[in-house]
Length: 98
Image 1: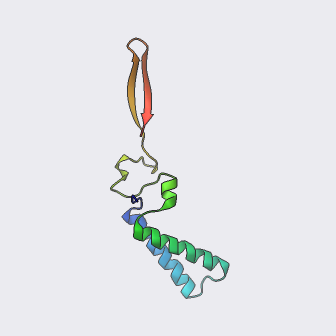
Image 2: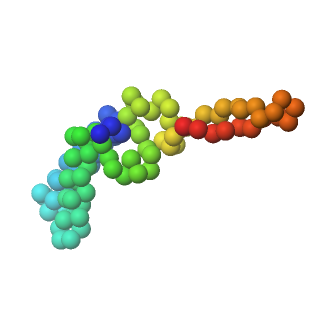
Image 3: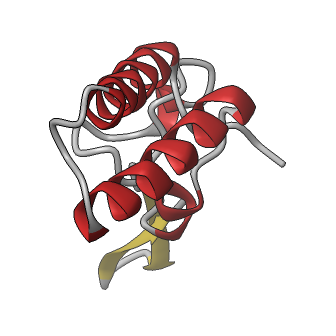
């Protein structure tokens, strides 16, 4: 499994999970919303521990610095353009690839 969660993203996820846990402990949140937020906080902790987020994988987002060299500023894959000559007098065709 390739990691796709960077160190800053892991820190933010852990801090948000800690904040939700504190809100629940001090009874700032309760009921169904507390249960949903605790589940989300648990998912945040697991994804920050393993460095992998399934939703990031689904949307091709990679905040890990080791892999983000080929990513665009939006986090989506950066496509390189290669010019392929079809015929010497007819011009060229740009083909996009990953």
